[in-house]
Length: 472
Image (cartoon, rainbow, N blue to C red; front, side, top):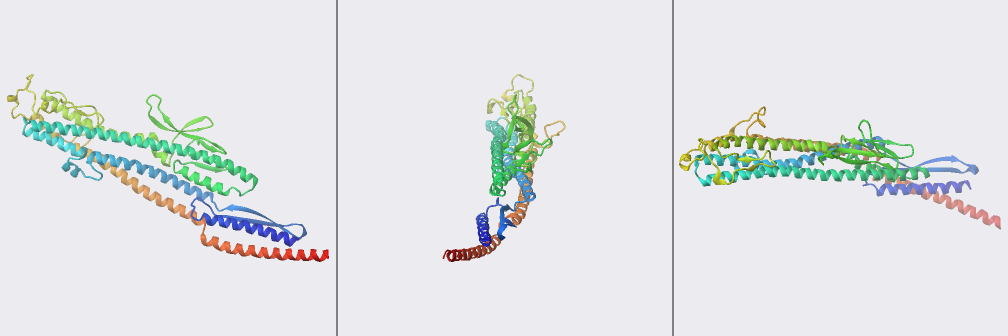
């Protein structure tokens, strides 16, 4: 009987091994799957029988998994940074220079973008200075001024549109993070329940949980702790740490809003009714955090406003000498507009003190137009003015600075993606499925299965023979 019991258990164990090998081979291309194997432990029993306990184990390694999660988190942040400056680079290049990658010289020559608009605007005043009584010259000044103001308005609106896009991405990522927290908590509950019935039975669910944790790490950085019941606890990396998942209970991530202004100000976490401020250090939400994006976009707006406000104040200071009041209205890029009623109202000369300048008195007088045209080459001082340099060089520097940030973000993303790939490949080499190894195990296990089956068949035949003869 001992031989029969031994052969029966051997068949069961080999069958379990074949099932595990088949599962491994079916997941050879699954990056989230860790190779599984059947571990056996035998002990002697009565009647010369040996009893074998088998358990399915996973090659998953907590240290390698943590390395991957850390790199995925850094890649998530790098991608979000890239996306942010990709959008800003497109907006600033097109708004300031007329097209992506266009130079200052190209924009000025073609009259495209804000830099080209500035060139056209000041050139029109130069033409008016040459022909101060030409309606055509006045019309060109008015048209170029309106076009320049519109381009500044559009640039400001483009930043608003970038903010709307970033807010939508923030909403999506927060929603995804919360769904993943719930998923991990649910998997925790299922894993605990299955492991309590049979150790090693929840390996597939553990793989699924690890995949969910890696997805979560692309959004936020976090710490994880393996508990004795098979569950994993997740908390933020801040001080103090804030719990996000404990057993089968999940917390949530929220967006903080200023009650007075309605503006988004940051992120929060909530667990068991307690809400705390949250500032992830990595993952996409570290970049999309309103406290970060607000600072970046505010800087962009301030640069455009500095350009527009200096244009408004400088041109108005000269044009007021004509006795016609302000040429531009507004305070920044968002609201700059032409203040003069129409082209015919534009004056090229100074007011000599009379209530009205007659056409004869104005004949040949071009001091105002000449002075405004010379503003194009005036170098401003940031200590007393809105910026350093000329209008065109400052406008170009805005686009150049953003382009530099975009280039830096591009390089950082490429480097980080390579780093993540290396760490993933290292883990796959250790815990992944090798087709060659599994096929070798398959052939060996099949041979063992067949041998056990033959032994069992022989023992069964002998028992049948003994039973038949005893019966006779």
